[in-house]
Image (cartoon, rainbow, N blue to C red):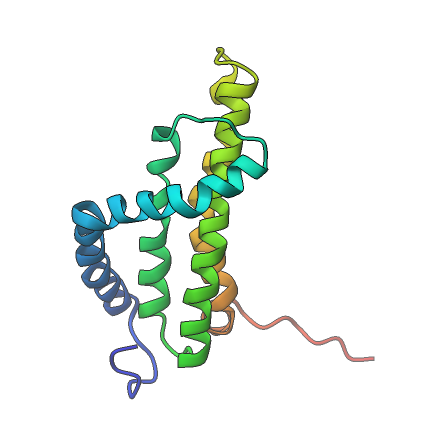
Length: 165
């Protein structure tokens, strides 16, 4: 992104850019962002959860996954050959989807730990939600960066043979 005049960025350069974007974003998240997002989540997310029947849930099992904005944003920033419209639209749309996934995660935590009662099986029923929550930022990025990823795959994988009839 920072040097679009270069046609092909090396993997090392993209990795370096990712780290250079992720480190300050993570610092901001740890120092002010997490508390601000939790306040936002309580204000906007809790009323939605109440309408879904959630009466309370262990917030701690959800807050650890709320940092999912950071890798998504960093990947969207450093991905080369993405138009600004797609980049900005992807970030905004992705943030809404990630927010909704946090609501879903809280709902799933409520089912696993509160509604059905805490038991030895609680974490077993909650574990799939954690896997989905951890994978979602990368899946969203892959959707928005599909053209770039297609170009990368075409460079790595040989073209399929064309059958002549």
